[in-house]
Length: 326
Image (cartoon, rainbow, N blue to C red):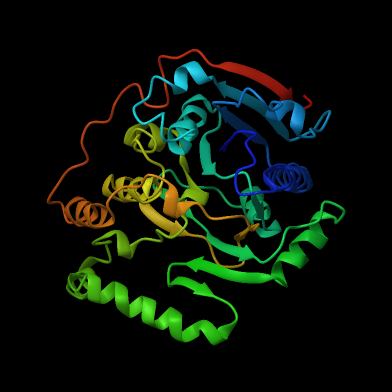
C-alpha cells in the first residue's frame, strides 16, 4: 500500500490507522503470516513521517511491518511529477517488487477486511494460475478506533452506502435503483459491441473485454503470486493514476491468469473520504476498453514489460517498524 502524510481526502491518518490495526489484529487472530509493506511516496517536507504519525505494535507473532521511502528527488525525475505528487501504482510496484511473500496483495490503506478473508487465507490455498478480486463496500461514515474489530465490522455491515461487484456499482438507498439501471444501460449504449462479445463468450467462457472482468475499484484489491506480478511487470507505469488498475487486471487476464472473485461474504469495507477523481490526470477510457478487446481476443499480445518497473535501479530506504516473533 502507498501513501504520504498530506491529508488526502480528509481523515487520512485515521483511515490508515484503522486499516493497519485491523490487518494486524485479524492476521494474529487467524494466524496468517503477513508482511505489510507501506510505501511512503514523496513525503512532504512540512509534515511528520508516517512512521511518526501512526501508532505501531511493539511486537507481533504474525505481522512484519516495513516502510519503504521514495524521496522527493526520485519523484522529481518521473514524467508528470509536477502535476501529480504521488504515483500510486509506481509506488505499489516499489512494494510488489521488494515483497518477500509468495503472494502479493496490491491494496489501499483505508480498507477494513472481513474476518472471512483472513479465515480463508488461513484455511484455503491460493493458486498461481489465478488473480483474485474482492467486492468492495463503501460505508457512510468513519469507523471508530474505540471499537473492537468485531464491533467495527458490525458497524460496517450496518452502514453500507454503495458496493462494487461484478454486477456493477450500486448505491443505497434502493430509491436510487433506477439510476443504477440507467447507468448499466448507458454503458451498453456506449459500447454496443459488448452484446456481441458476451455471446462470443458463451463458447469458451473466456473474458472478451474489460467489461467481462471485475474491473470496478480494482485498485483496492488485486492479489496474485509474486511470480505472476513479475511476469506482467507489475502495474503499468503511466503519468497518471486513474484507470491504471483496470489495465492491470486486463494484462493479468491477457497473460492467461483466471480471474477469481471471492464470494461476497469475503469482502472489504472502504471508509469515506473526498473524491478527487475529476481533478486527477487520467487515461482515455475508450482507449482502455479497445485495448482490452484486442488483448483478450488475441488480436494483440502483451508486450515485453520493462525490467526496471518498481524503480528497480533505485536504492530505497527501508525501515523495519515491527518484526514477527520467531
